[in-house]
Length: 121
Image (cartoon, rainbow, N blue to C red; front, side, top):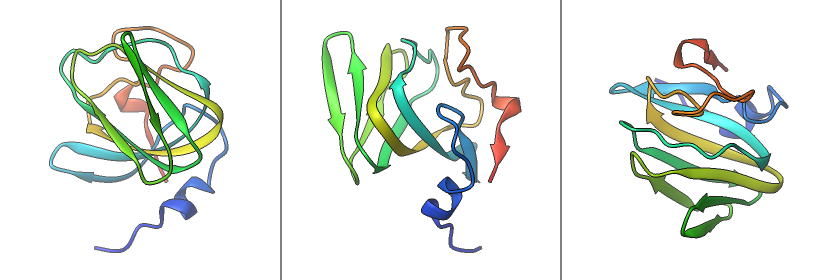
């Protein structure tokens, strides 16, 4: 057991939409990711996802509304809900989701990261 410094973990990489794992518990992973620009529209049929903004700002776009998130704010996306993260400028985000989550859910895209391909930082 030890403290995990999110800013130190985020400083270890610079690429966007390439999540890194910082912790695991009860079949869930805690990930850090940098976001910039629009991610593809997608849904996760069987998993909820939590987005917590650490630095910067981002929008979680849904087909019927947009949820704007600033530092210290989070939003849970229920399973099956189509969504798209979008950040006008680079933001740092913590994700909390089941270990089996594929980053683009039901969509194949250049940003797709398979659960088995995740790196730890």
